[in-house]
Length: 455
Image (cartoon, rainbow, N blue to C red; front, side, top):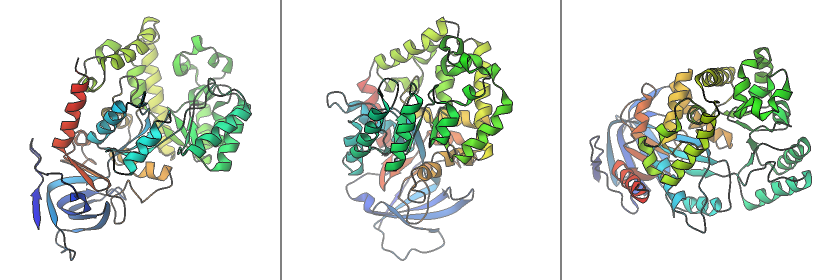
């Protein structure tokens, strides 16, 4: 029997070797199962062929033969995080470098499940290779190319687009703005016939109520709620007057309409994807230029960072992002988020990466910080990145939870994340379907990415 100590110093003593993931025991860990808020202290967990075979107190002997025993050294083991609003990079001309880099950045930050929200044909082979064990990466759930005013020309064409994406093997559909009501209704009808979920932005000519009644499974960015509360909807349709995401009209929102919208969301069994960090960074008061040299930008190309700066700068120059506009808008979004959450609307952990100043994996920790500041409990935050994503795709209990029979997808950290969210930023080990990645391996991959984009 080989026993290995997991060191919490700068050097991680585990050695990854072929076949090592087939069967091993991790002892002396505290398990945050996410089945409830209880922490299973001083437990051992047995992994066999990528599945959690047994969980037991250390005082209980294991009758099974185990070739490898790892001492968890009192670390905390939890099911990992999610990025359920990702813009997975496209493999241009077959070049998969940016895709593979994003997958490593997710893993290095404990993100074990990713929902793509603007699809491309090159995403399908990426997912297939990860599923086959040929590439390292998180679980992927893919949307096809988005439905929008630019991609949809008629109800008939929209219906055919739904059928094509379903046949291609995409997991869900992403809707962008610009759809007309008849186009949306045809998308909804066809998607329901095929049994493929859909969600996204709320088109202005469709509106939140029709979107929810039409079957949206997720409302991305909490889109459409502010618009639904503006008494004079013609003002919403004036983009110069309304500003991006109607932020300039937030003080006109009639809050007496919110309870009915919350009830409608619950009746529709819809989910919300808040992406708080996207709005904080894209539409916040911090100048775009100040993001250029924050630590995680070293993992993105200079061209990508510049494009993000270019995206925000016009809003700064036009006076949209002054404190008098930004403060009430972001406060309103936090209020909306917590109102929906407290009412029982399920939440998905989402940051929208890689998007404006949101670097894959790293941005989820900014999202977590903002969720906490808004008032969400640590348990519910962790739930939004583990149990909830599995529920969303009707795979509850198969992953996203630490229980016998579930996939061995988990992360080891130093402190109890139910008490210390900062500990999530520094995983000692990431385990994906039983495959182990220690801190030194994750650092090595991040160093490679940094070198690829050396300024």
